[in-house]
Structure formats: structure tokens, C-alpha cells
Image (cartoon, rainbow, N blue to C red; front, side, top):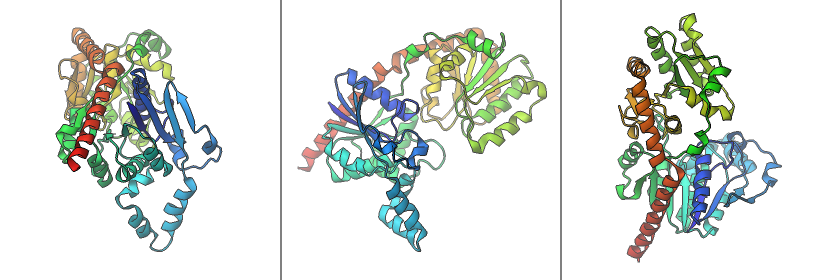
Length: 423
């Protein structure tokens, strides 16, 4: 099968969907598929809008672990002329709105790579796959689909923050698809509420590489940060609104009233707009409780596994994750997890079996869940073991890539069946 994967970025230092598409593409190459990956020449988000003439001269075609990567120039000057110069003119906003309509916000998120349209049409792929329906590459794919006739799959990775799902352009892209891959049942239900036909939606979870966690060492982490033998509750992720980090601090304030020696590890950077809120939460604690918090904005990547190995309980009581790889990573290290009900992670975590689910924003309920796990070592061990079993059975790349490949084949069949009916 000749597969064309698209993405707005393709660089090993960037996480999220770029690394997802890298690992998926390389695994499909192992299955003897021919995989093309078309992307922009931007290597990070700031490069979507900041011109560097040298960058547009870097290697445009390369083969990375068997994946045929082609990078398309970001047209900064064209973007500047259309979206800055014209919009400064009288009536300019209406002109751009007339030209691009519902795609305006999509294009503003960048990177502006109009050459991608022709690239898709000339690729002659058996199937074209677009992950992430929010950046400009998805609009370029939408245009190519309108002008061409090829099997088309979307991996939307819907953002769960309020407002992000009410995007007209997103709905149009989804309705063009012959197949849609949702990460969770929660995401599938959102798609169905948009009027997407159930038969085109496949639920295939995300994946990790368990071997990356084989040589982790929690003692090394404890020694470095002087945690001694204290019980630890750990949050690993961006400390942003919606992720539940502030609620966790409130919950720990309750936990410390009963278990005074527990340590809280907060690993991950803060977004600028949330720094002050987060700092005020910590300042509101007693001085002795503030000293029980290890707040790591940044940490070496090789320490990630050690953080999981050290912890007793993993907590990310978030409502905004479209999947949440951190829960799989904690499971892989045999740790119990706490997440939220009625969320994407809550649809694959079994409450009471491999983790606990609480109401989002409810610090009392979260504190009770933390105390329950800290007080019961057998419960922690049992949940962690079940979680690890779930990872090895359902969330490795060997398992997930096979399921995705099957979804691709079904989409190709649906596309050709539609063509026969049209004739």
C-alpha cells in the first residue's frame, strides 16, 4: 500500500502528533508499506510565522528510517501580504473573509504551505491521511480532496477545550473523509454528535514503546531530589488550565491534613497565562506544605522514566486531553492512575481496576482517591499491574499500527464502493 501521511511538523524534538505520525509511519514501513510523509519546512511552531531564508533551502526530500519525507516551503511573504497588508486596508478583513471563508482561523494557525495541495494531487497514493484538523495543512488537504479523487482518512485528535469542537472548517474536513480514526470512545461520541456516520469511525488508541521504560530507576530520581523514602504523588504534564494541576494542589492540602509526609512532584512546564494562578495556589499553602512540593518546570528527557518509577500514585485530573499518553507511561511502570470521569482518558481507564476516576475540579473527591491509594499498597500494586497488562495487550505500536492499517484498508474499500455507486 502506498500511504501518504501529512503533518504540519515533522521533527523528533516535537511531541504530540508529530511524534505519533513518525512512529506510525516507521511501523507501517516495517509492514512493507511505502510511506510518504509530507510536511512543512518549519521545525517548531515559532517557525510557522518567522521567516528564515536559510531554512527554506534545507533538504526538501530525505528518507528517515524508511519513511520518504518531503518538506514544503512555508510561504511567509505570501502570508504577510494576504493576511497583514490586505487586512490593514479599508475593507481588507472582508476581502480575506470572502477569499477564505470558514478556513480563515485554520490558516491563521499556520504554517502556510500552499504547495502541499499540488504535492498531494501528484503523489498518486492509495490513501491520504490527515492528522490534526486544526492547522493549515488540513485545509490544504481539504482543497486537494475537493479537486482530486482519492481515499481520505482523518485522525482528528479533537481538542477537548470548550470552543475547539465548534469549528465549521473542522466539520467540513471530517465530512469529506472515507474513514476517521478516533483515539477513544469519548472522541467517537463527539464525532457522532456532529452527524458523522458510525460505520466510518474506528476507535484505535494511542501507543507507546514499552522498551523505553525497561531500565528506569526511581531510586536515582529520589536521591537526586532528596525525596528519601517519602510517599510521592506525581503530576506530569503541562501545568495549564484544564489539566487539573491547580485542583491537585487543593486536594493535597486535604491529604496533608491526614498524611503529613507525602511529597508532591509537579513535572512539566507552565504556560505563561497560568503562571500567576499556579503560583498563588502554592503561596496559599502552609509554609511547611510548600516545602513538600518538588516543582520541576523542565527536566532532562532521560529522567522521564525515573519519575514514573519513583511515584506511588500518578494524578492528572484533566478534562482537556484527547488521549493522554502519560497514563500509559505510568501504567507501563506499574503505577495506578487517577483521571476524570466523562473524559477521553476516562473512557479507557477502568475505575477501580487499573485506576480511579473522579469528577473534574472536585478537590475533595480527588483527595479521597489519593488517600485511598496511598493507604493501600496492595491496591496500588494490583491497579498498576492491570494497567501494565492493558498497555502490553492494547497500546504498543505493533498492535495499534495493525489496527490503523486495517482502518485504512476499509476506507479504501468504502471510497471505491462509493465510486461504483456514483457510476
